[in-house]
Amino acid sequence: MTPSTLQNKTFLLLLIVVTVAFGAILWEFHGAVFWGVILAILFAPLHRKLLRRMPQKKNLAALCTLGLCLVVVILPMTAITISLIQEATVIYERVRSGQLNFGLYLQQVIAALPEWAANLLDRLNLTTVAELQQKFSSVAVQASQVVATQALSIGQNTLQFVVSFGIMLYLLFFLLRDGSRLALRIGQATPLDDAHKRQLISKFTTVIRATVKGNIVVAASQGALGGMIFWILGIQGPVLWGVLMAFLSLLPAVGAGLIWVPVAIYFLATGAVWQAVVLTAFGIFVIGLVDNVLRPILVGKDTKMPDYVVLISTLGGMSMFGLTGFVIGPVIAALFIACWDLFAPSHVDTPTT
Image (cartoon, rainbow, N blue to C red; front, side, top):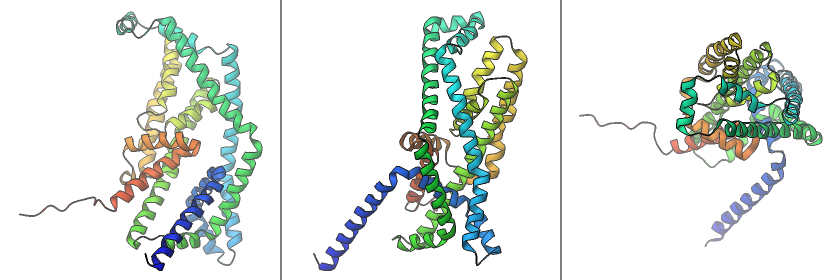
């Protein structure tokens, strides 16, 4: 082994070790770092426009962009989070005290079923009505407890939230101000062909745009519409149910229907026909069509990954990284596909005869 080869291998080993160590140091605040990078990418075009108006005032341009980011994104999300914590806590207390009995609601729905549907349940040997009610009540209590616990943990870990929030804002300012130079430096240090770099960077920015500007806008729209119709119909906790619908709408083939469909069925079973009709029509023709109308405009049909890839990567990302995983998962999946596309051409020329 020549001295130069030994030096190169030693340097690469040192580079890997210090990179892993630095990542371990940042891991405690990976959410703050991640969202700082995401917001910097999203607001970079706006920052460039401001910078063209004030080319000699980089700090002021970054501060103005940061202020707009606070007003447009961060402050509304903070207000929604506070309302979510309050509503989740109230609903959990009502479920635990028995004031809100999901098992009773299920019993009312089953009692309103036609005879052929009740006979079908018996023939399928799913379970008895009492056992089904007990299981449904148990699941409802556990689910509400999980939601309330997560919401309370956010409120109780105030110091950690404030520190993470401050780190995100601090990092966002410097990424806005120096992001172009940092990206250029990272590109120069990456040992890949220039064409491959451009392809990976293009894929990364496209997925960020598709996931955040597309999926989140669609999810927020569906959640806001769902919460609004729940509020109009007098259902308790509209913010909580709206947030749940927003999260579920991120998952293809699942959607916000998992929330509003059972409520519509309950309305119909208990004789609240007009509420059931209004909720069903609104869910199908308003909430359901938001995805078909907004997503092609914000994302574009050619940038959308297959639904099964989005579903698996979103669930896996949230399982591994928590709340931020619904963005991290699809981004990693898209980069995985992009890296393999570098070695597998998207089309093969067929020989002519």
